[in-house]
Image 1 (cartoon, helix red, strand yellow):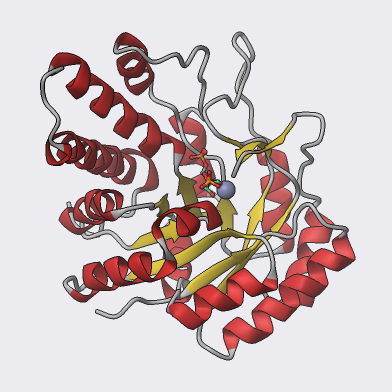
Image 2 (cartoon, rainbow, N blue to C red):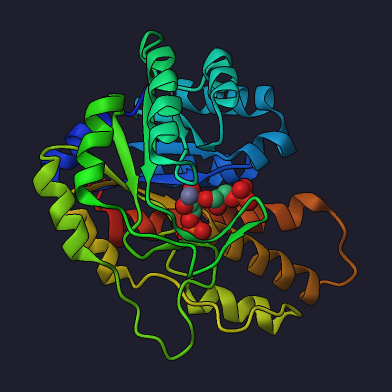
Length: 311
Ligand code: G3H
Ligand code: 13P
Ligand code: ZN
């Protein structure tokens, strides 16, 4: 089926209390690993590309790879721009065939965020493209921009209601304690998400899909594999899975995962090359990478997101 926007898939997820996984893509192997797992589980899927991934792979390559993937499956697949920083990149992606865009004005003044987001919504909606906005600032690393814990700020529920009303966005990314990257909590710190804030947002925005960024769980297994085979990733800590399951039972309908895929890919490539020092065929280690992506997505859908439409 053609690439679809996220409207219906997030509405259905809200009603049926599951979340659609939004997995970051950057090449053919990530697209194939993610989509094969979703297909095997009959799960709706959001494939998302950040500006950095678009710069790496080229927008036309990504759009066409996703188009080929969507064409051969009856499952709904959306192609989403992750963390679009301005109107121009959103417009470019919409014009090239993305079905959904995120305009991330979370670091701007509130009024500037409203006005830039509204401009994107007007352009996108007239082309049947859905829009995700963001309010509140997550800690962590995106495109090499690091936001410290001190600069991060939680979403204000009253402002969230006002923002959605003024901009007309279709979904909203909120800051409740998750963060980008592999270092979400300090060693010894008890992981905590602000479910009280999420609850207040839900009260003010009933039936409205909320998005959780920075939601990777950072599996100990992946990190150990990397470190055992020459890597150096000390003290990596993610979001506990039971917290994500709780968020899914509330208004969270889209969960963003990138770091878990990166860690799994890196671990398997490191392991293969370490154990096979004489081998140099990329098809070998990239197929291990693709299988690792498949396994992460399969597990995420079955144990956290609950989006499989068939057992
Ligand atoms: O939220 C950020 C995503 O993990 C994308 O990261 O900007 O390094 O591609 P990136
Ligand atoms: P992670 O770094 O936790 O995977 O978050 C990814 C993300 O939010 C992409 O937008
Ligand atoms: Zn993000």
